[in-house]
Length: 191
Ligand code: GRF
Image 1 (cartoon, helix red, strand yellow):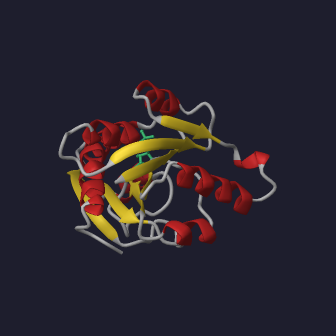
Image 2: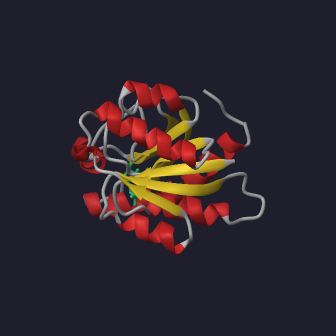
Image 3: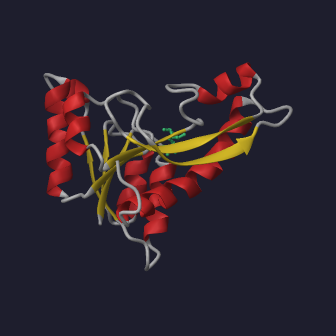
């Protein structure tokens, strides 16, 4: 199965998917990486792996719909079966979400339905929670609301800062996302 990845920055989850897909029995191949930021470091990483890339700024389009239609055209030109959001920092409109619904997943750094939105690590610390984690879920029109495919948990430890907690969760993200994409590409999970 062919997969397109949408990023806005570093792309460490994208890298984890690319590395996983090199295993001979992995059921998916990353065929293209699309960023809404031309300076996203993840674009260079993808190019180093010989993967097609594209970047397009929403501000250059007259409307969000036209921006997202262009993203769909690019993804279609790559003939992708699935779309993985990996640190893509724009909220997607309903037309785009419905176009890819059931075939588009996201990774979010919290134990959804807890802590939708931004700054999850700081909010977990402020709340005094004993555990935290990450979730791969189907993308539906409500932000961070689609059904969960997989979650991973980590403990919150004494002395944790947002940085130490972020790093602990990220280790799990990099394992979880390839597992969830493999389940999706093998047809083991569906919306
Ligand atoms: C990750 O924490 C992911 O869960 C969130 O955005 C971050 C992206 O990091 N959606 P990276 O670009 O994959 O390194």
